[in-house]
Image (tube, rainbow, N blue to C red; front, side):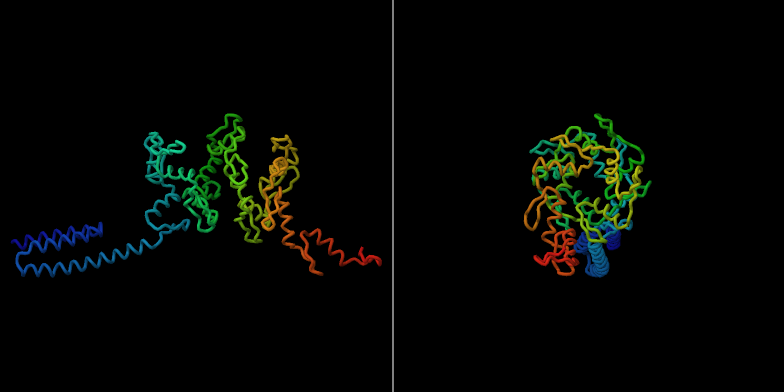
Length: 423
């Protein structure tokens, strides 16, 4: 009876062991160890001991093989990637892929009970709840600014230290925030995973899509109190208000020039770096900004969707059309604050302002000579390249006009007998 009782207890342990094995393979190893220990402590007779020992050896052998096999599967899964079938984005964990899929499905199961706002991730809901409670436990000692979570606090601290730990592996550009790096990466990949359901237009970032959707709904929640103009988001309104106040908080650390918008500062910085990361696949020409590349590509396709209603002239982009329309209206909205002179184009105003400041931001990389305008630098660079060659004598010139004058010397038939000059 005692043997039957012990065998029954062993069977219970085996059953428990089997269930636990399915739930957690790490606990399974502990149960095997406990079972072996129990066998040694409950020896009663030598014969029974050997029978139970043989039985356990078979059981442990099977379970050890199962554990080893599961570990190999886990190892294989950890080294593999889980890929989204909609946008081909890959993740090293299945959990991250499930969270990512909510971007496409629009699923937001986590709802704030106070305001009804929903979120795709639980941690985002927790972060949002603090906006109701007003809890901001993280305080910046240098400036006194407070934050609701440590991630925002750490990101802010890097604005003081200048640390940029997130680096793009493709171009080497560094960022203070991981989110900024992710936003930058779509420049290289060209990925636009957020489509508009109404017009089909695609966007790189969800926030841009949300802003775009308001153009369909007509929603303009942010109004300028000074001029009554409406905007779809607060950041655009804040940028607009600087037009009234004259505030320019974004300053170039290289030349000291200030701007009202951060995007304008970024555009300006390429003047110093000379970076042109956007290349045309058809002709190889490079550009500083993607918008300029997009406009250039239309010169190959011949696409000119923007037409002037007054003269029917067509343009590849809306900004060029707007500039053209000012030729008809005589409007000159860009005024120099130093002398009051007005211009129809902002680029002309910028070129004019340099006459007051004496700034020469365009420098030749070969000889170091500086120029007030980029077009002047482009002409100057031809002196070094001498890209226009005479096919008859091989002489090189910096521009086509000089080459044309020179080529006429080969075709001239009238020669002065005294000096040899041709006419």
